[in-house]
Length: 491
Image (cartoon, rainbow, N blue to C red; front, side):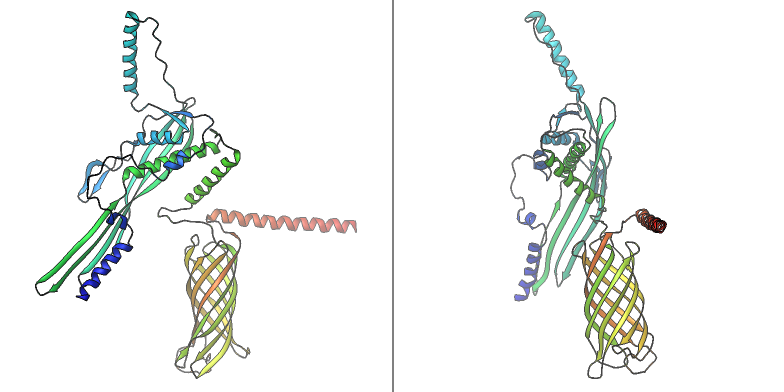
């Protein structure tokens, strides 16, 4: 029986460790009462915004779903829309929460005008019969700004995947799916029709499923079967609300930055607010579709130092690991390709047979696959020489290798790499035997120090920078010649 409890324990442990366990252990088993709607992450941010010097009267006629997309199902689609049709109401609520805007009724303006006509006719009759001094109905507020835009896209299944395992009747699996909505919001001046500001916000919608099952014969003709799981879907309405609230936040801050409106706080707080927003905006510009953050990271020049092990592959048996050290420098032509040179000191040995110290000079060209990310693999290849410690013999060689680097900070990186050295000769271990030349391997862990500013991602910007550097050198030479000529004339 102890073998029976072991897989059950594994399944329960997986349920405890996987994300979404709160959903599993808080399953709804009773009817719930109506409750006040949930706040999103940005609702409180809008409420805590600094107050404006004067609230802006805005009109929202229709902030609608422009996707025209229906909700996807396994059988195709249904006639239920993929996103909410009440985006106008959500936007008006966000405008109220910000306290920067005074929204006025424009979505159902015909209903408002009809009601005002009823009030006028009623007052007119009342004025004739009972009260001739009955006041006139006050005029409607008019908007200085109209807010336009809508939900412009709903992309389903931009990422799908899962993971599962089954062993000896015990199994579990998880699946996920990510959708994406996009919202545009623009402010239009009613006096001139000019579009004052446009903002663009996107939000992903996550769906997850987790299940575990157990299927096994515990005795003859006794079958034990158990299954559990849950599915968790992020509500589309919450996602739309969050995107719209973020759009309102962006509209307010960019409007302050462009001096379209002003806040009733000190200039220091305004500068801090704008600075934090610009940092977030710059990060968003450098973030790809799948949350990959692109940034100019690695400096133009690098010094590195590696320590590790060396292993010979020669004519003797029982090769033994020994020490290896290496220092050098790199110069980047562009973010992807660099030229590097290094010197190294290492020992090669075979257990009880051969032991010899060497030093080497390597010249390589290196390819960095993901230069704009903190973690990247790289490949390199080149040529060099290997010399005995007494420099009595020099061997020419070719080398290639690969590694991976992680940036600890903007100027320091940690790398792990392996190099295969192909010696052009068979006397590295003092023995000539067989048809194959001697070889050796280096394995190293090291630090890279980056200097100067990182190279720009855009190719044209890099070319422009090099042109500016050339012009600067020419100018310095010209000034130097002028100074020398002036000194000679004085002499």
